[in-house]
Length: 389
Image (tube, rainbow, N blue to C red; front, side):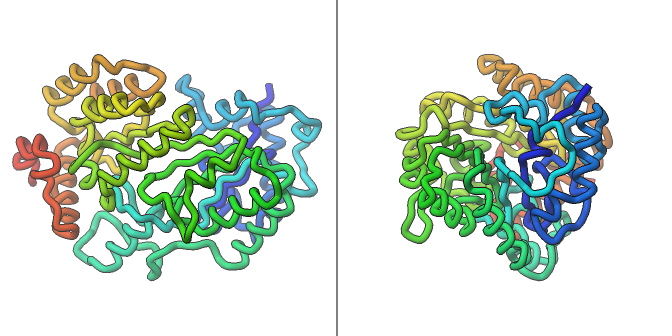
């Protein structure tokens, strides 16, 4: 039985390192000079053939792992979408030229935040902090430059290949770094408008902190598009805690921008919450605030697994039970309650070491940023002192 995946035939993911995959969940299968080289490579032809024959290529293990657990995966989600229009090309493993319809472009890690659960690969602000502060031992710098970018030849290849495929583009997904401060993002959106391709789907994962870029405004630009515009805002909590957990956040600015977005794209506005030990205690209040603003889709299934010392399962049992009790009014299996419940109820491994790591990590970052966990997350103060080794 075929394991067909639309991404393998029509998708491209470009990482800040210059590596290529069909989607962000796929492990790179080789080193290539450009998108065409990747798309027509023997490795990709072999991977597509494996999928047609019902095999499970190891490069796609993230999807297989989810599917074995009965969960949706990137593969099953995209195959169920309206973007999946069967063609004769989907029955052939080899491809002579890329006909790419789905683009996930992350050509740099430029970001205006340094979220505590994130790191240097996805955030230039994190990379800058680690490069300038040798006392931070829980993160490691990537190279000696603040911003990680794909090499110039690959960037030129990206723009040319996109231009060559502009007639077949169906969807662009932008994440980060932070897409709304990524120059390539604005180049491509302007190119789509000039080519009359405002019918394409635009999907985002953004911190929504900065809407203006060199005289252009994101919401004004999105209003030019007739295709679906879906904006997922990454926001884990509100107020001072938001500014602590996602360093760089200006809460009042973020709240204003979310409400401005809702004015024009209420149906396309999602909020995605990543729950960590810093934010889980305030999750019920965060959900309450989002509902009060009229956000129709709130996704909180992303419960932090790594780094393990920031995972919610290391909290005391009575604290975890209290959180579940307060979450009861917001139970929704599809949006994340079951995942939260699973992580709060599972028995943690190496809990003493992970708690000690949490204390040390928090102290390092508090010192680097002149912040205080005791002010931003006062409930943690009640038991942190017993976690030191």
